Image 1 (cartoon, rainbow, N blue to C red):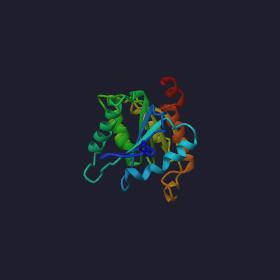
Image 2 (image 1 turned 120 degrees about the vertical axis):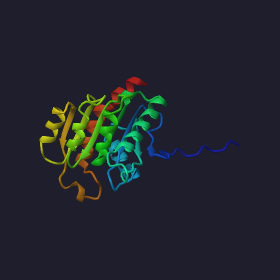
Image 3 (image 1 turned 60 degrees about the horizontal axis):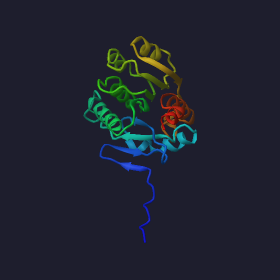
Image 4 (image 1 turned 180 degrees about the vertical axis):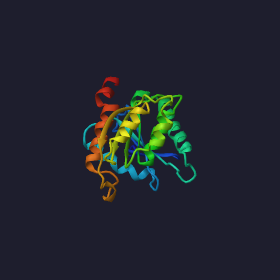
Length: 215
């Protein structure tokens, strides 16, 4: 008598990250999400189900890196880790056009540095939710190898200066949305409205239609 197959497990725990697999038979794209200081990668697992309920993310595997901010003031090591993950996804067969990287607060800085400063791979977008765009990071990336990679931002500052600074610094701000100024007082780090903005950004950078064409 054949041994029953083990139940399908959507979670894969690697040394450097937690992976939430795409819906079975649907995987064509990968989204890497970088946590902020004081958080852990697994803290963001909660956002996968709400995003999938919005209907655009079944084809996406989510990867949550384990970042270390304690001895990485300039985010160099964290950026290297994210590039390593992106490179591994490409080696596994995920096309660079099917990969996006995002992050929350300091994690958005890591995402920008990792993607725009990557001299090897060019992926399809950088997404972020932040209380305030780090202008110093933006200025440091104006001449980066991938400075023209589309950037999608949910900005809680309420100021148009950050968008202008990114554009004047040579970055391509593909979409810009206002975030909630009271989000950090809620049970989750992002509001439903911010998740919906992220969903729109993800759909633009890793669209379902694009994925279906590739099958």
